[in-house]
Amino acid sequence: MKRYLVILWLFCTLGCSNHIEPGSHLRQSEVALIQRLHLLDSGEHIYKFYSEYKTKVAGNFFTDKRMACYWLDEKDKSKDRILSAYYPDIVAIDTVYNAGLTYSPYMLVTTKNRTQFRVCADGSHQQIKAFFEAALEQWRLHQPAE
Image (cartoon, rainbow, N blue to C red):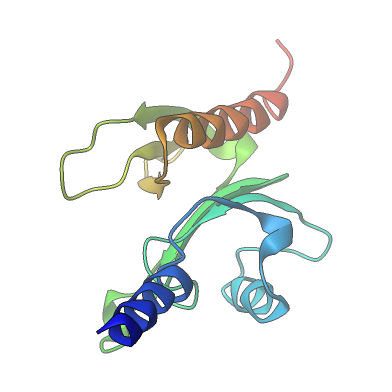
C-alpha cells in the first residue's frame, strides 16, 4: 500500500505540473513547439508560462512582444486553437480572478479587430496576481505615447 501511495504521489507531482513558471524553465522541445506554432519569434523572450494540461497540448504565456495561448486537440485537429496578439494590437485586457469552479482565472484579451481570447493562469492568488500584473505591465510598456 505504501508503495502504491508513493507511485501515486510521484505521478501527480511529476505528471501534473500545472503551475505558473518562468519561460526560462521550459525545455528546448517545448520552446521549439511554441516556435513551430508561430507564437514565438527568434530572440523573443517568454516571461511567464502556464499550462492547464500538458505543455505539448496547452499553453498560456506572455513575452516581450505578445500574449498568446494554444490548445492542440490530440484527437481532432479541427479543434486546435492557436491565438496571439502583439501588444500594440491589444485594446483591452480584462482580468477575471474568479472564473467559477471549473475554469482557471484568465485575462480576456481584446484586439483592435475585436477578436478575443483568454490567457489562463492558475496557482495561489499571489501567483495569479503576479502573472496578471506582469503581463499588464508589458502591455502598458508597448502602448504608443500620447
